Image (cartoon, rainbow over all chains, first blue to last red; front, side, top):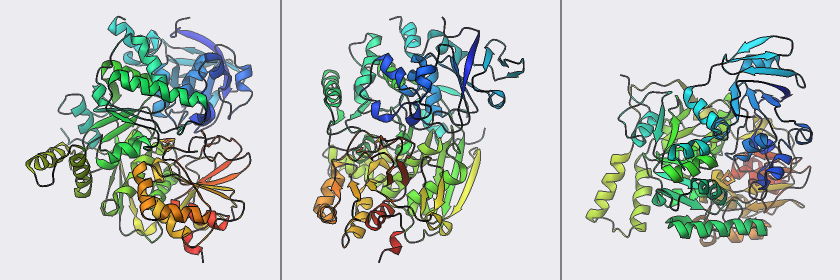
Length: 169
Length: 437
Ligand code: SF4
């Protein structure tokens, strides 16, 4: 599956404001856990202990303001990617988390109107080309379309593959 | 065209341009790229590029600080891989375990100079704004990309100026001011912004106190934060650089160095575009506390009520400097810890530790019953050295009190200035030092 599948539907996990990197991926693991399985198994451990065991590929994480504040640790993104999360949709993102998401090929969308509508456990459909999200009962909200710079990195699957393309490694 | 903010000037210069606009995305060449115990992980990412050599080894700065001395064989192996990498690549600015916390050590060594840009795989990299540099935190992949290419895209942030004028009341510190700002405006109050600190109170602060402000702005969501460099900053840089390069005071090399430092300083234009501006009167400030589990859950200490504590911690890149040690020593000189309470004190660098020994603080701490640790991050992010038990309450001089931050999700962390931590360690509950008998 290309990272930028233009239209996809996922199940919603919903969280609040100021969710920080320590509860997304605890600092005590940052230098010890290295395999993808281990990293995925601790995703959101201190926020929602049921998440890692029940998340399914293609799920959506929906959150309030300032998602991902705190540490620069990239596992706070990669644990979600490895757990199969398809996109994170929030009112706003902390700037380092947002950069890390993009650089790891994880779609991060700012869309406060959708956060108001989203219900945990429900599904929603994201249509990238037309920049809207539809809820399961047919309501739609729009978001700011992604810039070309952002799309290029996402389409490559993240910053490292993008630079490799540029360097023709 | 309106004048340029500090952030515009610093990023334009690092992108090889004269000016730039807020919101523009630039390819920036940072002067310094920081990493620490995460260097081994970054190396594994960088190896995907298939390069033998990093592009600019002289621009890299690496410290071992987050888990030192290594608490486990896995951590020790991590340090070992970093040392090998440093040797292979010929990296000069490498600081061994025990030298101290990255932000403190690079400040002491003036690896970063006024007007420069430093990007670091550490969220508190805005720290370097204390000396007039542009510092921003980035991710590991981005650091790997910088090692390979030497440049990275950055968006030019809008600027929020925060003014502080007047005389600070006795017992009120820079930490209290930082907590007040974050408490008033929320943990995302400065999201994506460049914060410029200004006002006579800021420039009347000691350099050690100033360091607290940009450092804490990481908890405000800021991209960078800056205080315009003045004479004390230039003197700090000049003396330390001269010592490192063996330049004698008064020589022509000394004068050249001083000239160069001065010329590189960047100041916002008087007609620059500010997105917002805040004014605080120092007289209105008091000691503040951030309550678990959020840095913006701030109350005046006078309104906190009774909070008993099990453990106390003085240290970190925010408040582990000599004046912080001195504040603790003043309180502990004639007192002992409350029974059953543990106090861990960790100087931010080996220079701070040496001064603690010379000035007798080390002895004071030991006699009071405190544990003096090896310079580094200590329990700040829960790696080791004073991790709390489940359900315990900690008072700490650190910058962050998220759930699980110190390794134990059910522990509650209160944040304050070092003097309040020391006083609370004596009283067994959170108290204002001015209330101790
Ligand atoms: S002392 Fe704490 S906040 Fe500072 S660099 Fe170390 S872990 Fe990060």
